[in-house]
Length: 171
Image (cartoon, rainbow, N blue to C red):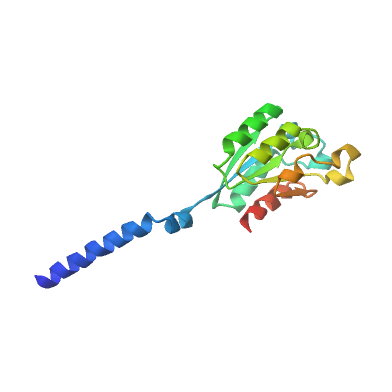
């Protein structure tokens, strides 16, 4: 009977230890699932049909599906809008809720001080992504107003630019 009592006592101690471990921040960090938000700006809803020689034939959904297949341990959320204010609203809502944001602001990259200010104000790191090599295109695309407040910029690799952006958050 004494042996059973000692074993029960040790089991209770082990359960208390296990509970403490499972509720510890170290364990919770281990269980953390990375979350990445992909935000696409104007005209990127037309991927797959708009200028296929520049942007390729894959739609935004096909690119997203490819990322989800490749990175099964990452949770992806997606947002697209042709409206600057909607992009700003989504970035502000995302702040602190994602591990990273991949932003392809399209033409707004070269014109939007408001988007730049938003990126500077949020706590979530943003990587600027472009499918085309903006530096080999028209001169007005050579300057991004967003790059200085982003953690990095990836351009010129087509749909693979998004994968490279994800990789940047994994290092």
